[in-house]
Length: 302
Image 1 (cartoon, rainbow, N blue to C red):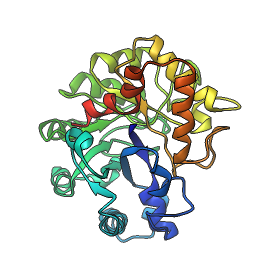
Image 2 (image 1 turned 135 degrees about the vertical axis):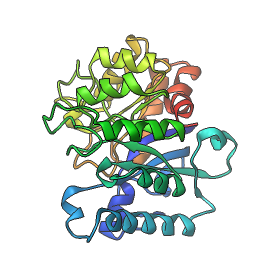
Image 3 (image 1 turned 45 degrees about the vertical axis):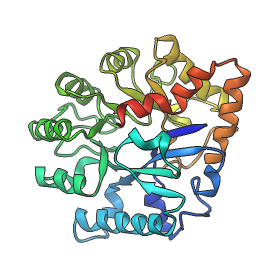
Image 4 (image 1 turned 120 degrees about the horizontal axis):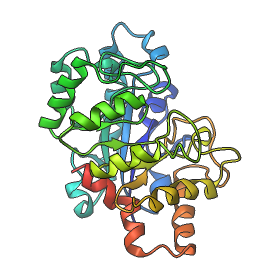
């Protein structure tokens, strides 16, 4: 089975914990992916605390990026960079797509050009902290998308970059949906109707995402799933969105290596085997499994 996972923080942890890509003690490595042909979205996470250890945000970004690039070169027969999902089904290797998590790096439109040169496909506009682009879900700020954020969004649209609205405040979400000319990604969020957390999205937001032709990745982090989170809870969120008509708009965004705990029944990337088995047990059609595992994400990431 092909598999696209829209969010992980493995590159961040590889750098700070000095872990290799091939085999490590993190939740993602190349060995744990062996049951699937994968396209994974590796985030360069702009951690406000770690940023203080570097002279500039760009120095911080470059350190993580260069370390991850070096590891990809070491493993190029197994995993290669891509900026488009178009070649995914034809590729002989697994693929890695780059995302920036947290727009705090971007203080000029030239920084967007810089990210394009580095083959970045996705920008998660905020993390928990608000920035010059937009306000975040965790901050309580109400400003939404800024005028500079609008300029960045236009440039992203023109360059076929994807705006990721996980971590965005509700006002930012609606501002972006009103202004974007391209489908958006909500890479690692769940249903607020099932788990009332500001990092999750409401049913109305999901309906707007469907109209936009965007896609949401189910997040495996227990605080965004609900009490006593398990494999069953992951399916509850996924099937809630399916009941809203989201067959073409749901995928996975596990948040592996960005979480301090996982649901019962999920240990690391290899647990996707259990998810696939559970889909088959529940009678999911082959067509639906393919859409959720990779085809929906492929459409947005072309």
